Image (cartoon, rainbow over all chains, first blue to last red):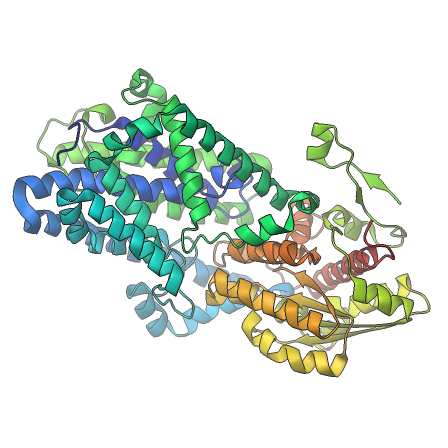
Length: 387
Length: 250
């Protein structure tokens, strides 16, 4: 099965870039600007967008590599990518430890004796660091990269099957998801509990992304473009919106019938609740309605910053996690005013864009090409596979 | 009884029955700025009965953030302040608040302690504070939800209402302890079981944002901590008396 087009769809980069910005905004605790992000208006959030598009681009890039160079070469490239992400994760963990150490030394408030328990992680660094290297200890906001690593580790055989029997591959993935929900499978975490993003559940979205990249999108195009589905999607988004509003205005909760709340709660993010999948799919259907393939406006400069971030997603993601730590630090140490929230949010995004442009420029250098100014539309920059 | 108009319904032009309860004038102003965070959508029938019988026993089950360090801390922490505020608000009712508070307890540990506490105190109300330790330990949110549900069911079986109290707002450690999943779970459990949630997180966040209390400060200031807990006790008392009004909450 050949992908329908060899051009990279800029919409992928655009929406992955936007998702990375939203993840950054959401990761700064109590950030007033995070009120604009989608998680406040529905069940799903930027994580779904990020995982789906990552699956799509991984299948697109490594699928081509697998067809041209075979299973071993493509598989080796996937594993190299997983290794890079692992290194990035460990780097972020070092920053996290430094932050805990700083707070533990500088903060002593009788209100917060309980919270200061976080410094216990420093009391036995041998265990803490070892558990972090095993990906079992994953501090705040550091759950996405381990998920990505696991998804990539088993991606070579998945991709092999996706190329030969796409429907079977997707069906197996869905069956695995269903069994995971049924039997509660997950990977254990440290000091206790399970992974916050259960890879056995989240793989469904990643594989679905891959399936779409390898021709699936073409197959379901008619259904996706049908007005019935579009209006169903709009209806579901409206329903989700009204449920979510009862979380922020608790008195509205009285208007939600008990059988509805019994049926929907808890909406598990860990296990990628079906309600979240449906919400993401609805968002996708509505988005595709308004942003068709080859939409001319995608080439406009206004979208370039998000697109270039989407093309260098690993660098941008890691920088975003670091910047959200730093942003929160500014809130507590310098100023917690609304103006500061806006300034930190905007500055963070500008830094992410600048870093992504720099990464583009480096990539050009490494290819031996002339160091032109970054032109995102021209670079097939991908999830690391390159050409 | 005052009637207020919230932001969203005001925009929609809907009158909002968000009453803030009566007889609040004697609380310090610093407490009252957060009064509108109290939502008494759900009632407390056992508490109402106990008030009618002039004897109200309450047990607060919580972890470290339900207490304050030192000898003065025990008297200044919100369970003791709750007893004071309730006694003042309910003249002629024998109010007794028992605090079962130990540091570093997860919800699961508290659930294990619950049968004994319920049997000895025989409370009309269980105030269950939870969230922070589970977040630090990384207990899965689904499991946290199951544990809360079981505790609420046990309390109901023992003839007690439950009020859930979520984690406190701690600006310094926000980027190290991820509370969102746990506060969300508590909100859902409260909604599903139609019990009140004392949104301590939102109240303290409001105080921090408005500058009512300096919560991000590094200094070891017990007096600020005592004032915070005094307000928490008073607001919790308002939530309880409002939800226990005969004929249900307003």
